[in-house]
Image (cartoon, rainbow, N blue to C red; front, side):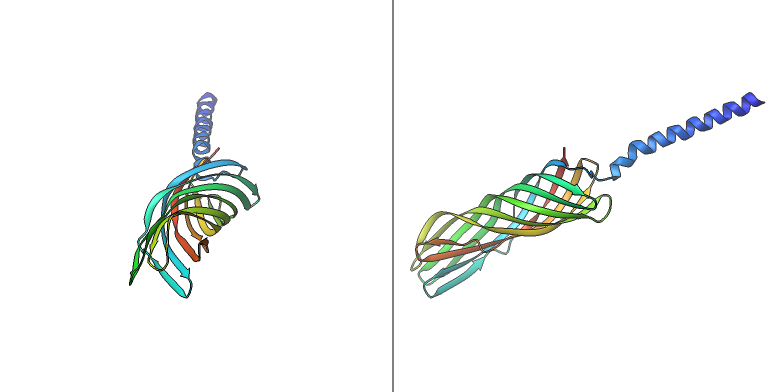
Amino acid sequence: MKNIFAAKNNRMKLSILTTSISLAAFTPLAIADTTSGPYIGMGAGFYNTDLTVKGGAAVIHFGDDKLDAGLDIFAGYKWNSGAGSVSLELGYVDNYGKLGTWSGGTDSIRGEMEGGASISILPGYQLSKDTMIFARLGYAHAKGTMTIAGTLTGTGSLKFKDWMYGFGIEHALSPKFAIRAEYKVLDNMSKLNGTTTLEPRATGGNLALKYAF
């Protein structure tokens, strides 16, 4: 009789051990990576750009309301401290959107904002074990291809540099993979072209997949 109870007891212990191992194997899939380290990411960016042109007494503002899709890639290093974190990140966007065409009398302007690189600091805060919110403050540059005809003259490729800021949310799918949604702004990117000042402003965001090493 003792042997029967002993066998049942052993089978119960084995069952509990097997269940514990199975739960332990799957539990990390729901836990974010809380260690510091490098990461990379890639996703789709959706941006549009408006432009303010100032030349003499003339001030022109126009843009395309449609979002243009492009590639958004990034790489960085994250330092964690409790529920907080700070990341240093390099990024690249290949398309900030088309400006369309403006015309008035003999004057016309057309162009688009191509991509550029950026460097940013991202302070973050863990809302839960697998969800983080973050802000962005950085410096970016973009390339614009524009043609201005009439009383405001100028044409060619121009480079714009200024601040980038934004905010977003990141959700861990596993200790290594996370999805990120973010809103970003590149503001007051001014360039003096002769007597004409061009001030484009790009707004939009991205949806990306992140991998932590």
